Image (tube, rainbow, N blue to C red):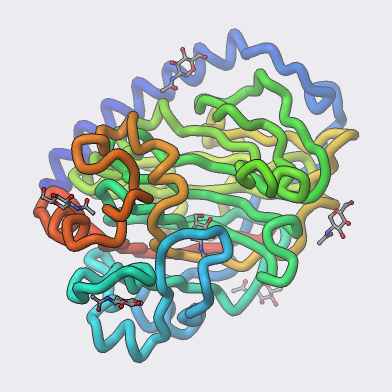
Length: 357
Ligand SMILES: *[C@@H]1O[C@H](CO)[C@@H](O)[C@H](O)[C@H]1NC(C)=O
Ligand SMILES: *[C@@H]1O[C@H](CO)[C@@H](O)[C@H](O)[C@H]1NC(C)=O
Ligand SMILES: *[C@@H]1O[C@H](CO)[C@@H](O)[C@H](O)[C@H]1NC(C)=O
Ligand SMILES: *[C@@H]1O[C@H](CO)[C@@H](O)[C@H](O)[C@H]1NC(C)=O
Ligand SMILES: *[C@@H]1O[C@H](CO)[C@@H](O)[C@H](O)[C@H]1NC(C)=O
Ligand SMILES: *[C@@H]1O[C@H](CO)[C@@H](O)[C@H](O)[C@H]1NC(C)=O
């Protein structure tokens, strides 16, 4: 709303966080993984800008409108570009890049509300991946995500890296999660500021039967990242680094120095970012390098799924006992999502890929 004063607040916040991170570094959390003893001197933490999408045209060139059936059972109908344009579900983002939205104009949404799934034409291996979010969808029932994954034919076991994913977006910060093939249990205590979710086995092959949870970390320290707050405070940037040693992620307010560096600098050294929000080490029993194929960036707005999982703690019980009791496809939910405090819009102002050097 008032970006200038927000930046002042943010700077105070960033200084306080940096101080905490330094203190934190003096007393590191126990790291119960062999990764601590491993020689990682060969692993580069310096990345060079390779691809920057920051205009609407950039996004339209790079992404396709992926009107497939939601593979994880979200109650949604993804439309093609023509239909997205007809219903005004796509356009330039308010801070550059793209705006996508779910539809609130149709009355009968029994088959799933119309929405957009963008899929990048190119796929990437190691590197640094950055989504800059100016505005995120907020409201009970919403399940949006900005993430990376393999070809649909081997999804999700071929590798999925969720960079910004949540349900509802009202009270909790988003999650960063890995999905892969085979047993791969993350150490319970890791050097990260986020909280592990209840599931720390990243396996989506066996895990498919029990809900395909993957291994998730909630970015709970980053209060600015709670979508409802992010929208009021000028946005945030979500980053994940994938190299031979680990996958790890951070979140930064859009006007913080790290976010500005990610937007403008040619080279990025991730050792300057401090303690990550999420940390997934590659270990002898789980070599991440072998577990992940090349990943396409995806941006989508789905319904149900994660939203149902945090229905109660987000205060959604006041609306209906569950998303799936019929409420999620009712006119009641359409009316609710039209309220000014809710939003079905996703403004992704940039997507950047930095390659390893
Ligand atoms: C990005 O990486 C590819 C593959 O290494 C390379 O061909 C291309 O020149 C790079 N582009 C930029 C802008 O650095
Ligand atoms: C949409 O996003 C959710 C959250 O990441 C994901 O699980 C689901 O499969 C997605 N649907 C599609 C079709 O991309
Ligand atoms: C709503 O749409 C579904 C299929 O999408 C259809 O079966 C049903 O008859 C429709 N309901 C009304 C009231 O038109
Ligand atoms: C995943 O692992 C299972 C069990 O080892 C195997 O049967 C399957 O082919 C693997 N899938 C992929 C896509 O690698
Ligand atoms: C995060 O984890 C700590 C320690 O396990 C716990 O006390 C706290 O309630 C958790 N916070 C959230 C929001 O889950
Ligand atoms: C919609 O709201 C009305 C009025 O509050 C209620 O009677 C009805 O059960 C609701 N329908 C659903 C599907 O939640």
